[in-house]
Structure formats: structure tokens, C-alpha cells
Length: 142
Image 1: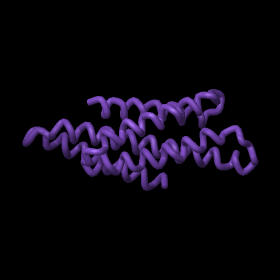
Image 2 (image 1 turned 90 degrees about the horizontal axis):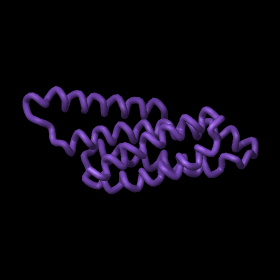
Image 3 (image 1 turned 90 degrees about the vertical axis):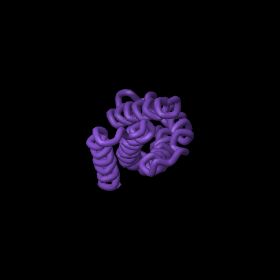
Image 4 (image 1 turned 30 degrees about the horizontal axis):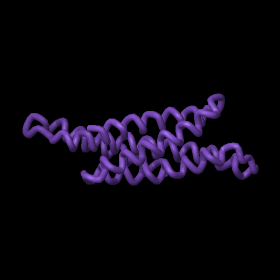
């Protein structure tokens, strides 16, 4: 899964580079640049959610219910960010509306993970969720 997100992000960066290179010939639309940025942020959010879920899985197998809310919101973030990255990468106009929903999911997940600031994986995921939330809100408002 991590490899798939790596290649997804890499391809989005290639598209962004091609759009920047083509700027002199024909100015790329503002819509496309926003969607490329949104797709990249969503792909990074999905990657962070996968890494957190790998960490939390071992805790749940030990019957530690402490991370139950974080795992549930992490799974939701993973699904939402993957879907948002796909919508944004395909230039779908619905990406902006779905970005609002994803931002709300990221905010909930960030709040859940901020309850455990001493655990590095939780802090990292909270930071990634906050970054994804900011990018989603920026895209949804613009």
C-alpha cells in the first residue's frame, strides 16, 4: 500500500511539473493547479493514515482499547483521502465538495490523536491530519 501511494504522489508531482512546464505555452487553469495540490495533500494524508494503522494494529491485537477511536477515524481518513486523491487527480468538479467532508474527518481524527501527544505515531498522524485538513479547507473555500 505504501508503494502505491508513493507512485500516486510521484505521478501527481509529474503532472504538476508538466503543468508548470507548459505554463509558458498556455497558462494552466487555476482549477487544475488547485486540484493537483489537493490530490498531493490527500495522498500524503492516506499514507500517514496507513502508517498509523500499522502501528495501532499491534496495540489492538494486545486488546488495548485505548486507540479504538483513533483507529476508527484513521480508517475513515484512509478511505476518504484515497477517494479525494482519485477525484482530484481526475479533475472531477466534485472534489471540492468532497474536500469539505474530508476536512471534517481530518479534524475529528486530529482531535482523537492529540489525546496522545507523547506517542510519536499519534503525534505524527495528528500533524498529517492537520495538514490535510488545511489543504482541504483551502480547496473547498477557493
